[in-house]
Image (cartoon, helix red, strand yellow):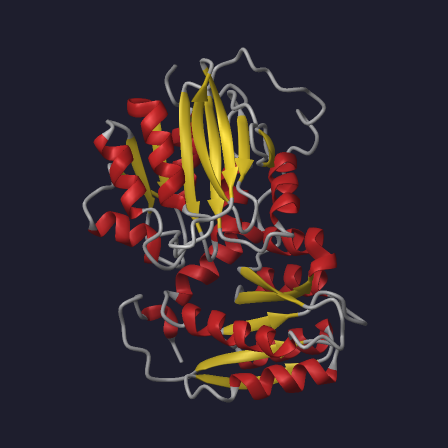
Length: 365
């Protein structure tokens, strides 16, 4: 089917075609059986290693590929490099918690998203894994596949980050952050953030605070990856962290993050979620706190993701005289969050990922 010519609001009648790549025959069979329960999904092929997967991908041209990274003959990384060069596709990495660093390497090579499988082969959590894969595919089914393929290709060709340029330097508390940027992102967000962080300016006067939906055991590794790919000193947030220029913090999984003003300093408050909060981390909570302390120097950035997390907070930023940026449909593969902000008339700017990075690099003091 030619999904690339359909927009996110189109009704998709034909099933989404999926290729399953995993060296475990049990996993291939179980994933296929789980997906077959949904009439909207068609499993068009199964591969046990990267070589077989590459042949089937080029022949079958599936809409989505689920990919295990550790395989014989050709591993998932080599497969991704070749696939993205020849025929960019939507790839969901299926990885264990112990492969956290590998997941983000795969995202930099062009994979779109990931799901985590239990470390214990006898775990009873595998049915949840198969259900999560199906839910991811059903979500991706509603979006612009052409946009995702272009997005994957762009990230696959992105030059390596500037590893280690500033990570040996300590914090510079006296260098005040003149702008506070609160980032809301979900599905597809890690790729977007890696792209933006790699292009940030070493002379920036901003600090970035990220509310990214991600399993809790992945947020620290993700923050370390962002730290290596650009000039901002980036870490997983801890309660009481001091915010300074060219600092960035990723909210820990299953927690919420706020900014508080304490003794003329800006610090982070990291807390468990409120039971009434639908989204965790809650981007609205982060955005509201940034609007409260930074006022006209607050910036709300809403990227990829489903749902409307960030709309109320973005409105608070706008009401405080700050700037609200919604990622444009040109690069936002999953448009729920950013389109909700735009539809509400809150966005002051609509930008592509490249334009966002340039905007942050040229903020006036």
